[in-house]
Length: 317
Image 1 (cartoon, one colour):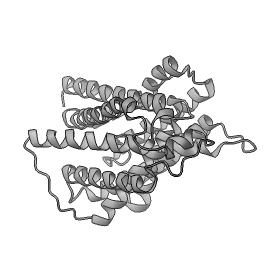
Image 2 (cartoon, rainbow, N blue to C red):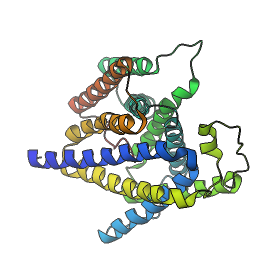
Image 3 (cartoon, one colour):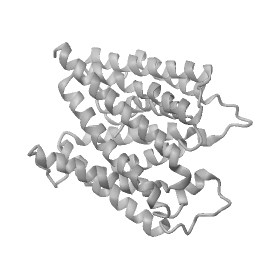
Image 4 (spheres, one colour):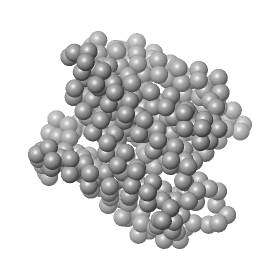
């Protein structure tokens, strides 16, 4: 693996993280005039069309048979609600804070790998996991007499995402990436269809709800003239970001490019500051440093043992 290839991989990862930072900031920007699952539906639909056009252009095949039908459904449901919780958290939490808490994901992946994949986790990685969760507590700054439990949503998002990635690792021995992508978008779009039938007309929305709750229950397409261009961007950005990440992990060393996924936290601070006047506190920055340090250490311990658990797959999709 040449240094030149690693440089290309780093550039691709940075492009992907920039797109994710832009997506998150725009969701925060429009959430008071849009519906959460309307965004999901549009994002998944556009991304599915573009990605499968890309697969067709590359002459790749999609095998429609999955060897793990139940686990595939569970994986997609976990991923779907993981990012439901994450996007909901963006409506009331600083962008950098939400992303920092989401990067507790490698800690959960390591724990799941221990108990479900029977991977060996030594005392050093257990210590790193504990240190990382200490960083999470520092960011959350819990005062249990006044603690808002909704601040745990990015952590819950990381937990569900880690579970979905554990299933992905388990099923990847027989289902290739194109098969997993096919069923991911198919099932995700079906979930959006079910949600539309039950709440898409805004029947559960109430004018007295706070903006976050209205974001969840608002009528779909009620402000489509305004939101369609953002939804189109989300789908295009997701497609480009996925291709960039996938290409980066192919052309460069995973041990190099995976570390640059943490740049998303820093990149989130830029739109957070200019669009929403968000300035992370010193406590938040200390917690972020703990989370990143623990995640990086876990990855290098996996590399030493030639046992990639936490960072073998991209952190976002």
